[in-house]
Length: 167
Ligand SMILES: Nc1ncnc2c1ncn2[C@@H]1O[C@H](COP(=O)(O)OP(=O)(O)O)[C@@H](O)[C@H]1O
Ligand SMILES: O=C(O)[C@H](O)[C@@H](O)[C@H](O)[C@H](O)COP(=O)(O)O
Image (cartoon, rainbow, N blue to C red):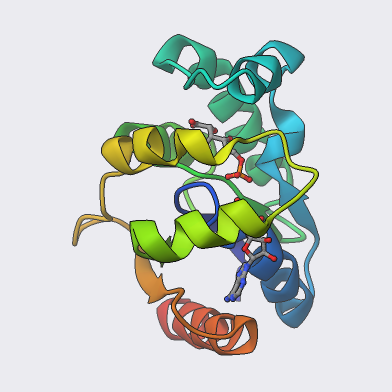
């Protein structure tokens, strides 16, 4: 069996970091948060309330894809927004075995969760731009959706079960 390469994706506040590290633990593989791979200018831009543009994203997505490709022997779970299909394709171009777990939640639920989160560079005011950019997984993309209006344990269970089914 190939080592699992997983991108836990979705808009800001959807729970990628919270669930991603637990999914990695259950799969017995390392976890990386793509937030840590952003160049400082990207973090500064978002922290100032300005959404990224695609030229800001491509070099970052290349780093995300490379980290996954470098982990093809050991496996890896990466938390990464991967909002548009083109971004997911950029990741897959580097690491073809990746499976995507799209964390889906309503604007209301995620807005509340972001308001309750502290110590993060991403302001809740950017949530609308994240939803505007999000393209749902198409049927021919490798992955599946998990609803996040649930407990963290339920979300992790569903993600791990889905990943065992597609592997
Ligand atoms: N299933 C959940 N139920 C309640 N709160 C959650 C859940 N998942 C995440 N949170 C909280 O929502 C906030 C956003 O989660 P986080 O993992 O930081 O999202 P992301 O990494 O996608 O931006 C955090 O404060 C986190 O503790
Ligand atoms: O493509 C983007 O617009 C950015 O990557 C953006 O999505 C950001 O990286 C995170 O989503 C913010 O961090 P959290 O998702 O952890 O809030």
